[in-house]
Image 1 (cartoon, rainbow, N blue to C red):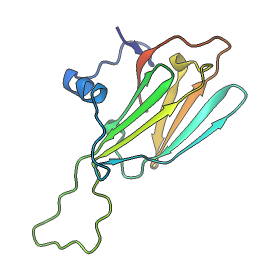
Image 2: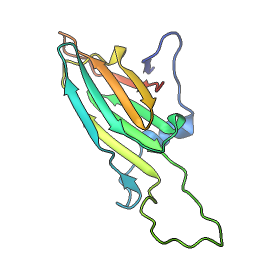
Image 3: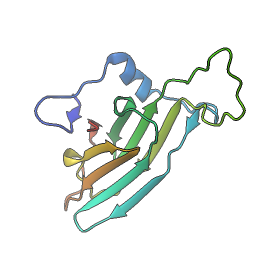
Image 4: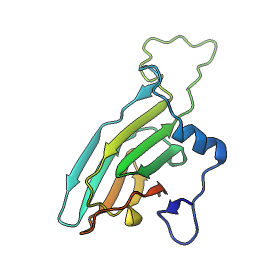
Length: 141
C-alpha cells in the first residue's frame, strides 16, 4: 500500500498512469526535457523550485522512492492549423522529467508541493532520523 502525502484519505493514481510512471523509459532527446531547478537548504527544510512554464497543475506528477524525487510532466502536443506555417518551432517536447536525489535526513511524510505562475515549489522538512524507504505520491496544490 502506498503512503499518501495528504491527509485524510489516500491518493491513488489510475492504473494505466501508474504503470506509465513506473515504467517510463528514456525517450529520444527531442521528446524528454529536464526542467531547471533551484535547491536551497534552510535549518529545518529543503526548498526546491522547478521552472515549469505553460504547464497545467493536473499534468504534474511527483513520486518519491528511496530518497529520490521523480518529477513527470505529461504535456499534450500542440497541434497547428493546416493553414499555419512554422517559422520557428522549438518547444515540441511532450514530456518533462527530472530525478532529484535527496539527502537521507528528509521527511517525505510532510512534504508539500505548490504550483503557481509557472514555478513548482516543494518544501521537504528535515528529520533527525534516517528516513525509511518510502514509496509515495505527492499532491500538487
